[in-house]
Length: 476
Ligand code: SAM
Image (cartoon, rainbow, N blue to C red):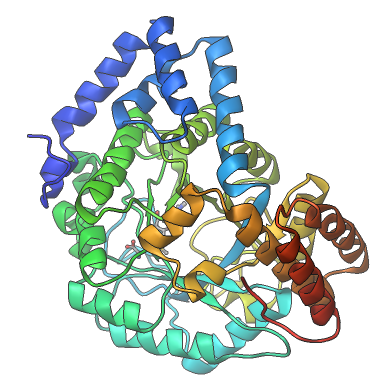
């Protein structure tokens, strides 16, 4: 039985409800008056239920689809403005005991195994800081012997300790396998940002088939992980579906049901939703899965997520090409990775993003957007976005419902906007190429005028000058 308040995965992600939602959406999609009523409700910017959002996703009327995209764009502008937050993944270890069929890290895949030492983590972090990154997502395979929680905690300590030149990692999000409340508490105490765990698929039989062995085989344990994380005191959790595996419409409904469950039980929805798509990797052919989706559909899924959960950040990685990322930004994405390496030790080693050392290819999947961080920043600026390295909310304790309250109050122009401009300024002064710096300085001048409160505008101006003169790390 479907019950968003239940603690049991099979009840808050009820398969009957997922199936019925897809059928309901199919029945309703051509009822344009009903679609209009849903769009009317969406314009209130308080979100939609999984059923309502599923109707929008299913609706293939040209005019209504245009309305969906334009509303998604408008909501993104109102809650997140034109700021795009940047981060990079840092792969610690590809030792893994699971059997995920889509991931080359799976046990017995024949892939070269590597686990970074603390010295290597130091070097990776310094290399990331030298690019200009301030925010990381820590990635690791699941292996209780090689990558126990103590290893992750020690690595977090190393990452936060590195202060290379003017660099610092100010927020480390963590993407590791589902674990216990006790371990989540340890991660919280180590000062992680968001705990990210992709569901991969909400379809239980599909999930069990795709994860034939290892601890990840347990659907309920994996699906209930966010509840344990929140019980362990982690305020910000990040959901995600690996699109391309199973039926997208059911996944979309499941994802929103998961968000509704977190809101119903913990009083706060997911901090972020990631939308990865399965990509070619060593021994992995995305076409071998049944759930492949076109770029157009992918973009519409993002727009419908933006409308359904207006306050939730949305993340797109370098799995996608520049072109797809451009479209996803318009559809409502608010965070992107840049200059990512998906191999263990890929940053300090140098070389091209997709280069494979002949005897040590530890890369998880191929990256489509292979540009440098400077190129990504320049591209964002040229497209009218403000690249942001801001980590202020997390560091000021504005996590969970406190972040949501800020977002809902639309005070972001007085808070997030100056913070974004100040972190961009740091990037421009410390790391940017001359053309990027020039474009960025012009952008900052223009964007300062967008700050409504004069006092805050003046404070931002003063801080920008201080950054120019060598001071760092201002935040509101
Ligand atoms: N080991 C952790 C777990 O079990 O959730 C997460 C770390 S894993 C490095 C991060 C994510 O990469 C996975 O959750 C999966 O969605 C994604 N991934 C794995 N193989 C992929 C592929 N071939 N293409 C795109 N994404 C992939």
